[in-house]
Length: 182
Ligand SMILES: Cc1cc2nc3c(=O)[nH]c(=O)nc-3n(C[C@H](O)[C@H](O)[C@H](O)COP(=O)(O)OP(=O)(O)OC[C@H]3O[C@@H](n4cnc5c(N)ncnc54)[C@H](O)[C@@H]3O)c2cc1C
Image 1: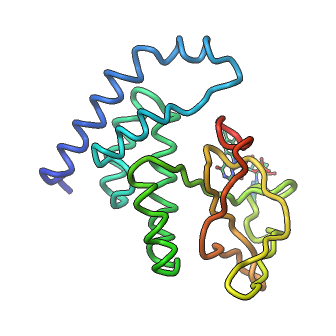
Image 2: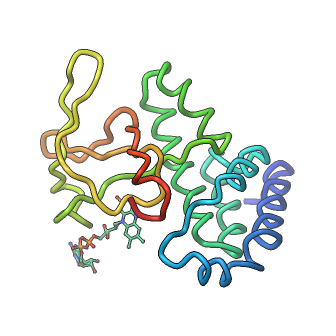
Image 3: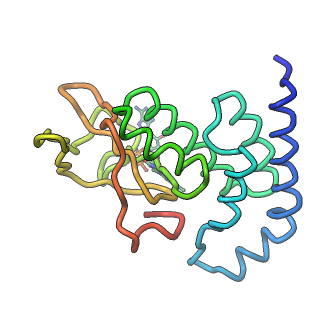
């Protein structure tokens, strides 16, 4: 497969971000920040303006490869936003998707994947979190762990014997949203 013109220009934009903005200061930022590494929201917003967020999976793959050359961490955000955004676009109620997806594409909100639970890592079939319908909302009962980069998390729950996505996302308390693990 050869990238089309749009994909090539997005690749180029991602390369500029990686080489110009992330790689030169990567090691220094690690040293300066120590354990506390707030996500660069301004850069994320800029990447949204450049069209690097929430695009199709093949284009996301091309963008992620370029970004990861300069900063693996920022590439991981783009990857998960694209993955979760596609699940929401396909499964969420239109009104829910209409509010959330544009914010994610603009880089105003980070959406994360939340599968892991305390005591449940690789085995997604053993998830314990339950989502119970209560009129037009869901009540989540359970714990999640190790969710990386998030304002909003899309928690996986278990229905009968199968793991399944809840049909939306949940706001993560601000105290948990600024660093790489929440
Ligand atoms: C930096 C980082 C970021 C993360 N971000 C997220 C996130 O955003 N969202 C999220 O949901 N989770 C996240 N995780 C959690 C990560 O996905 C889990 O750590 C992973 O699922 C493994 O779970 P575990 O550590 O409990 O290992 P376990 O599931 O206990 O596995 C332990 C070891 O046994 C092996 N193993 C397990 N099952 C089998 C099997 N059936 N056959 C053979 N070998 C097996 C595994 O490969 C592993 O080596 C993150 C973890 C890290 C380190």
